[in-house]
Image (tube, rainbow, N blue to C red; front, side, top):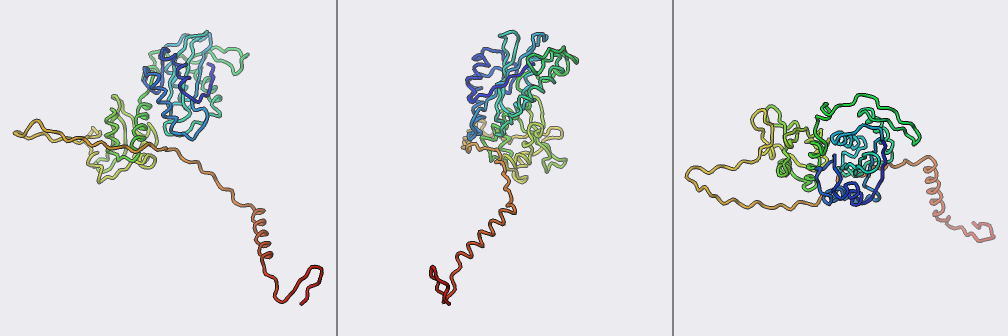
Length: 357
């Protein structure tokens, strides 16, 4: 495997090239595989706008080529390889998408990622190429591919290790494309940016409107919350596994979510044992004899505050003064004190003459 990494400022042209204006085969990514190119470009720009003060290239174009002697790879295997490349290079914490190109001598992948992550932190890219070379050597052994040398004239080495069949446990995991963890992380970060100071029940309502269910886990007596989780499309994942800041304490400390047991526990009360899920407020059914057709009150529209940046300002340590600096300051103060001292009374001093007392 051979990696080539380019940096671009605007994600639009590079996404159009990698996707062939929507005609190339998308094998994996943090978004649905059939996402439109304009929508994908806008999603990249929305993440880049989290750090408007940063200048320079924020889009990464990673090209992954295979040796001519490599065995034919299936679409599923290419999706798994793209997912591993994104994780090993640190691109899985932000928006990324991978397409397959069949032009040239062999099939190759074009992976577009962002150096700005969903939490507004910037990816360290100084040693990105070394990480890519290390990841290539590991994946060549893992997938049974020909090992390419570090230099152009190095000979190809035959594949080693066991090749996993398409029916193996690795391919049996979620299909290529956006996984459960990445889907949940994208939805939660988007909701937190729209409502940074929401209460925990309000956050659960906003997530429920997007199809994501917040699952609080209670103690045996049901008076405290000991953990949070998410349920999405039949799958369950712990909040701390999605992101360390998605725990109950992390939501309050890093994202401004408020929680008070006396206020919020009635809306987050645990259901029957074994069904620790968020319970929406139920509406009372009309009693027999009452009017069946009731006019519902309009739901008030709450204007959400503008999104805020969640990155941390780096702390610059202050160097303590040295011994030379202290001596210089003492000499300056002593000189100013002597220079500003008034002359003695009753004495006259003339140029060229001695002092007359």
